[in-house]
Length: 163
Image 1 (tube, rainbow, N blue to C red):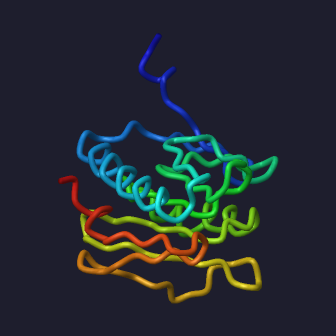
Image 2 (image 1 turned 60 degrees about the vertical axis):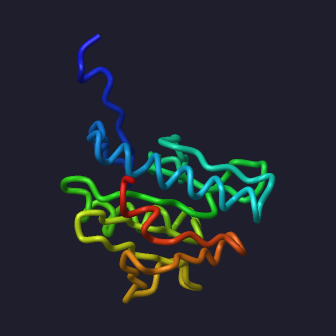
């Protein structure tokens, strides 16, 4: 099997986007974030789950592979919260067509993590099926509160530092 055969792709608006393999540093960041979010979920949503790199069907023309997808209940339909990490060239895709696909699928909350800038951008779905702008941005000392999963709160540092 070739390396290209192992690459996965997202389908956003009918267009295929290759999802590159994560660097060791990015994998370590997601590892720590996943552990922190799983711990937080156990406190507020015992039936909930945190899925990593799962194929999330948004529409017939949109399948995303977010770094982390959180569900507050046992069913895994539309995630309640999606956490995406910035990788090379993902800003345009995330803040453009991917954000729109998430909104159309009614994903209530998105956290976009830019570890290089030590920032987490929080987008919450508005009444018009879009994420109002300007968004909320938190730095490394911030505390992230989910509006979609009541009671879930994690220090931003847990998503921004690998250790």
